[in-house]
Amino acid sequence: MDGKVVIITGGAGGIGGATARLLTQRGAKVAIADIAFEAARTLAGELPGALAIELDLERQDSIEAMIADTVTHFGRLDVLHNNAALLGPDIARNDNDVESMDLALWDRTYAVNVRGTMIGCRAALPHLRETRGNIVNTVSNLALQGHIIQAAYSSSKAAIIQMTRAIAASHGIHGVRCNAVAPGMTMTPALREAFPPPLREAVEGETLRDQLGEPEDIAEAAAFLASDAARNITGQVLVCDGGCASHVPGIAPFRAFFAGEHA
Image (cartoon, rainbow, N blue to C red; front, side, top):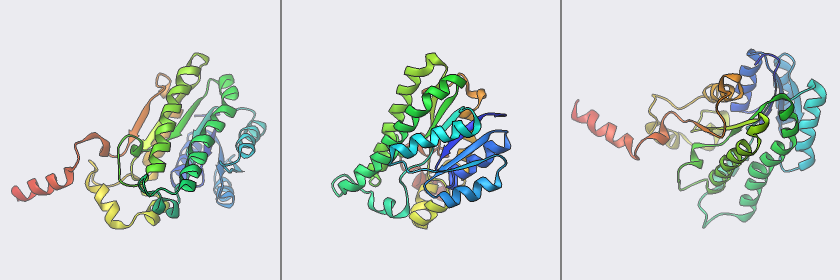
């Protein structure tokens, strides 16, 4: 990543911050874009050459300014990592099934996650053509599976998966790749606040590893997709969920049963 310029939206959060640190270690110049501007500025102060940008994904002018300010500051753009999403603790607690869905929450989720991502991609693509750069979108394993909660969040992330494929198909001929990384439940500070231990333990029981993922695990996946090592990969979704989406439902009770049988 030496000399590459990367924008990370939601760059001051758990996964975004881990990705900013990792890419800086690998030689990239990072623009940390976040609605939490003070947190972005603090992190940027810790990383050599980083730039903090205040970003509101509900505002087209804010998104377009993020792209323009990054190119003005660094002179180029190589990677847009659309990592930000509407997913605070209060949002997560109110994002349930479709029948009980508050329409304002649904509309805002799509405005931030889908429309905001599209505007960022649209503004970045002319610059990415010049550098033969790429886009990495953060989605979710919930975009690939049904659940009884987070109908707005999961369906918005599924829309971004299709957007990822559309961009890859229409801009690959111009040298621009577009991929997505799909985390499972990841132990960020926001997740610890939004999901109590019993819910985290239920997901951990379905994980094929011995623990839930950490932000650094997702950062490694995003960094790979952003790098030239992934030059032949485009239009793909890299699931990084500890194997949760790879097996039949209910593996946890089966484990417990057979563990007891062989005790």
